[in-house]
Image 1 (tube, rainbow, N blue to C red):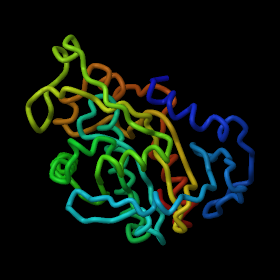
Image 2: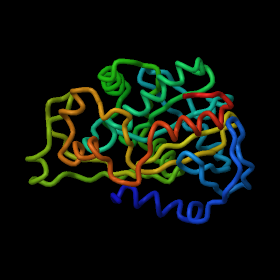
Image 3: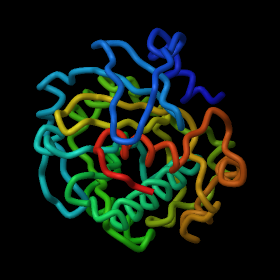
Image 4: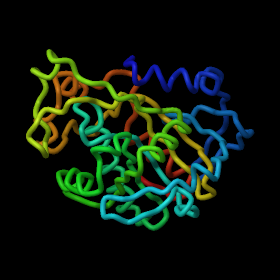
Length: 263
């Protein structure tokens, strides 16, 4: 288990250690008391947490420059993952999974009701223009990438239990790191964070969570991003460290939350 995963695992220990079994059927959310959790049948955990308005109203900005808030997405099911475009270990695979999920949502003709959203943990480097260039590497724009001010992004990820910490690379580490996919220079620091994916209900409640490294469907990411991966990143692409989350768990959760069958 990586230190990223350990951070968030500790945050949610009280919720996850004693999940309650329940009868599950497609399109039916389990009735969970506020503040408690139940294991989801395909993966992750169903929750029932009201999100404070100060979090829902934090201003965000998408790759195309559009400004929005999580609260402005009320009425839609929202799938959210954290990432940064300078990540060489995990995030390129997170994005590959989120793109695949968005494709499945499109196939189900549910894109007006379900939003796939990645929010950076590195707002200083992840400007809207860099987000747009990163998304272009993946060949489509059917999911959202977002950034914001450093204060707003820090507040958002602190609430969701995954605050990021800036860690400078040592001189020895810098010698062995691949060059950035956009700048052609070696990045000076990383933003260490727990890896998670979560979902909000159409009522803007936090209703699902999964933790760990992303397990891709086919082991493929854009060539520019594969070239950018560190040695650990290449290992994670081939065989992600456990715990891990996959597309199937996210799709099952979305189907239940949105009452739309998404395969």
